[in-house]
Image 1: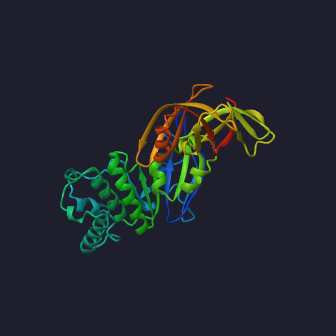
Image 2 (image 1 turned 180 degrees about the vertical axis):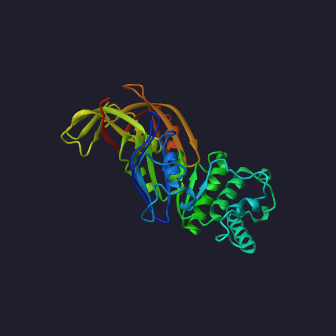
Image 3 (image 1 turned 135 degrees about the horizontal axis):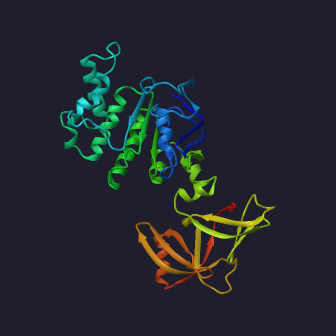
Length: 356
């Protein structure tokens, strides 16, 4: 089902939760709403579900204006962070609940309900727990049951609000992979809220990054990561080093390094370069090193598996630079006994500093 929101505004007292939000969600795709706490992502999800109504703007489902349609008529499946399972019911009864409370004319027969529920429990690989109560299940199992219950009513859209937020890191990772596989089997249009960048990048087909009630950027995970549209997106998606300096004639001067600043040829203003840790090269310090660079000293190094993470302190302003490199490359540096280096950013994105 296609979903679109147009010019959505929502305030809670003096707080603006959403400001002029317009988005089209690709049909049959899994879209992540990503951003810090309080950015408006859960409010937007609840407005799409019909659990909240916008102050202005419209919600379209399959091209029809559903802005004032009751939640029951929207055919939305909703999965919350804290499961919301009925403790006094068995797993089977929890999944069957939405089918059994349908109006009599729409309610399937008990035989059909049993077939459907057991089929969904097999899909989430928990049919062997059908007679158990939720208290006997692990957190990951309860969340899969909550998802099966949401799917039982054949929703036109599946909405998930921080679905794995209450789980530990190992279970979260397992369930992320499981959700991705499940969505590939059942390509229902899905939207999930998360503040976990890794989760969004790993699971979603599309990512919408929100900040202070507005959309910062939307697109495929790789495109958003590789080509951030704003300083906020660059800083929010993954680790980044900031190099402050001045832009002049299409280049940014920062300490001993000069970085290209495409698109800023006519600018003479303070600027900041954003550089990922893996986009910095280092070599042992030499006073006559060609090509300039930044004079840095090694403060700390930590090798984990195939990668090593280095913390380097700049000689000119004492700021710390984070560098990530293959562990084999770091081993050669360590074995050489080097502690002082020249650091050169290979790839940077330069933004003009915004006036406060």
